[in-house]
Length: 368
Image (cartoon, rainbow, N blue to C red; front, side, top):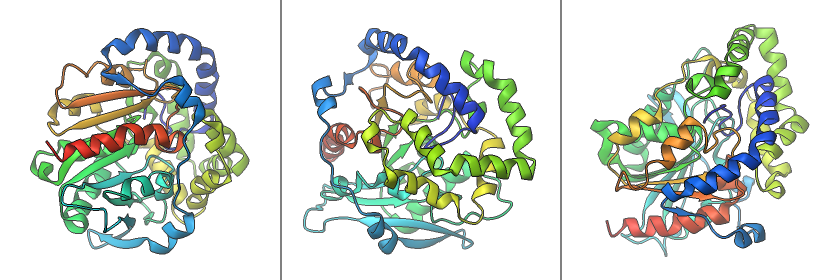
């Protein structure tokens, strides 16, 4: 994510508490700065009236995702869970194939409010990254951003087998950026959609943000504590407690109505599976990985960026957010829209606003 990583749902509780405390004090100032800075953004989201009304979006049932998901063996060894949906009567040669990639702590159902809208005219794949959802969580595996990017490219090569638009949220966005920047594999990627892109795999990714610098001693202490099995287990149990999780999600989402029991189950359910604790520790204590700032200039395919202006985890006034908002007008393949009143996970927070920008963008790809 990040100025503080929680991608989908992350940093360790002490860091999260510190971030949320600061966030509540900074919202008013950030809104003022964003209004001044939007002159560099090619276009903004819908009007505040549309934002407050909230469109009705048909979600895929969790049972359907569970029953119709498939398995793929990555490298002939690791079981990866994925889901496919399309409407054959509506999918034409001009339609796109898209792959949805979730953020930290999330899984395929985090896209349940988007799959139906997308599958009306496009073929939709969604994947659980290794270590998340119903995919395998192998003991002793060292998770890295590069390994997830490799997984995405191998999935496109072996399963999808056609140029694909990668759509990611948070750390999933960063994995898509890394995959799209691989020169030898660029023919596999048709375009890129980034929803509140992460700056790295964990909190150590952004050193030039004063907020991270203030918290760095705490983050390093947390890294040390997480490597103590007993402490890590107690901390993880606290994070995945449903009441705690709902409180955290309420701070992360702009649209509080979408923080319901289904969302809590989407996040908490997989956290109880074997290997989830090891994945949690490895991701939070591992290397942050490549920074999107160094990779974006290498990407020549069309890029759409949607960013919620209520994101306290990867704020628009943080280093990564500032970088992305500086790009419209500099890169001809780049479009960015600020979504007003939206938090860190736009696709689930305000899917109607995401679809309003995403669907026309996908349609116009056919003419490019």
